[in-house]
Length: 416
View 1 (cartoon, helix red, strand yellow):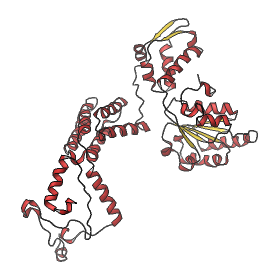
View 2 (cartoon, one colour):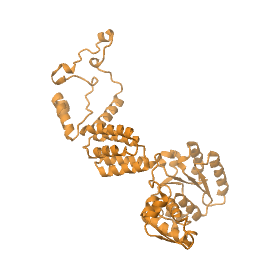
View 3 (spheres, one colour):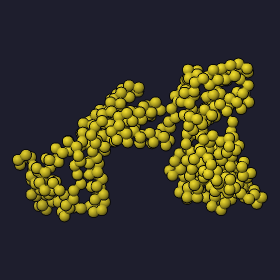
View 4 (cartoon, rainbow, N blue to C red):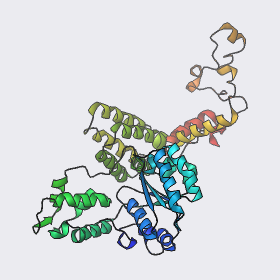
C-alpha cells in the first residue's frame, strides 16, 4: 500500500499539496537536505522514497538503531562514486535520526555540506533537542501531522479495493469509530488493525466491520503515549497550563490522557505540588497542602485508586484563585543576587556563638521581635545599601490581607 508518487500520498497537504514547499522542491528537480519530524505512521519514510523515485536518484537507507559511524562512512563513499553519473546528489535517508550519537551525526557533516549526499532524516522527537546544531543548521525541518479522519478512512477504503488479499474478500466498513480510535492518526496502525480484523475471512466470504468487532480483536490500550518521548512533555504542559488557566475540564482531560497512557502517578503528583506553589501560591495557600496530601495519598493507595486524589487535587487547583507572586519574588531575588554577588550580612543579623565574634559586634543591636508589641519592630533585614522590593502582592483577597498587614507594619515601604 506504499505509494510511489505524490498523487497517491495520503495527508500532509501543507507540505505536498498544490504549491506547497516540498511539492515545489520536487517538481523543480532540486532537493536540499531536510528533516521530517512527526509521529509514527504519518508517511516520513514513504515521502523520502517518493522523492528518490521521482528524481530517479540513488537512494541509501540507514537506521539509527542498527548503524554505526562505519556504516555512515561506507554509504558516503558509495555515494561519492554514484555522484559522478548523476545530476542530483544521492539521497541518504536516516530513519530515527534522533537516535544517532553525536559522533555519528558529526560524520555526516562534511558530506551534507559538500553536497555528496542529500540528507533526509526522519524523527519522532523534537530535532532541536536531539540533532546537533551544526547538522540542524544545514537542514530544513518539516513537521508532519497525524493523519485526520478523512485521510485514514480514504486509506482504509483504498486498501479494501487495492490490497491483493483484501480485494478478494467482501468487507464492509459499517462502523469506523473504533478503527480510527485505535489508529490514532497512524496509517501503519490503521492497516495493521484492518489486517488483524479481517485475517480470518476466507476468500469470497462477507465481513461487516463494527466497532465491537474491532475492539474485541484488539483488546489493547489505544493511547499513543511515550513516557520518554515528546508527547510526555506536551501533555504535562497542557495539563499544567489548563490548571493555570482555571479550566478544570481541560485539566481533568489531560490527567485522563496521562492515566490511560500509563504515566507514573508520582510524576503527576509532583507537578501538582509545583503548580500549587507556582500558580496558586498565596492566593490560596491550602492548595499546596492539598497537593501534598494528594501526593502522599497516591503513594499509599497505588494505582488505579490513586487517580481519585489526583483528580481531586487537579480540580481544586484549577478552580482556585491564582497568584505567582511568591514565584516571581524568588526569581527576582535570585536575579538580584546574581547581579550583586555575595553582599555581607549586617552585623546585627549574625550569630555570635563565640566571645570573639561577640566582641566584633556580631548580633549587637539585634531587636528580638517577640519583645515588642504585635511581635514586630522595624529594623534592617537586607544588606547595607540594598533598598529593593521583591515580593509584590497580586490581586486576590488572601494576598490583599497580607499586603494590608505589611503596610500596617512597614508603612510607606509596602505602600509604594
